[in-house]
Length: 96
Image 1 (cartoon, rainbow, N blue to C red):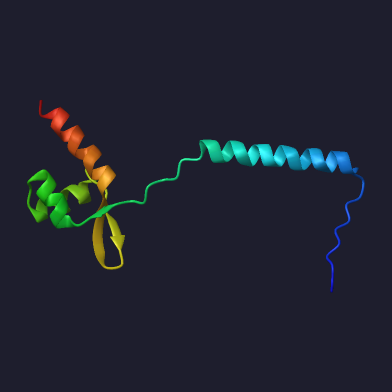
Image 2 (tube, rainbow, N blue to C red):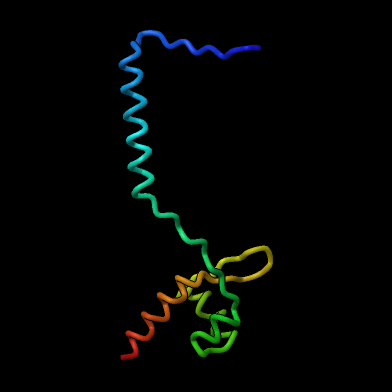
């Protein structure tokens, strides 16, 4: 049976243990504060058009003007739902 041996020079056992303890504490702190991101939800052009109650050519024009951000995925155009919702809220606020 082969055993792996690790040799660390210029550090004593108590210093090495202290380093590992600090590392464990940092990992615990990261785990406590870590908030995983939700995966992006993608919308089609038709779904965006329905949300805004506009036509598909208008969706295309808005994307070209930069009013809404579009993404090319393979040969399809998609929109991030969160970004579209923010745009919808901004448009609704502007119309009041």
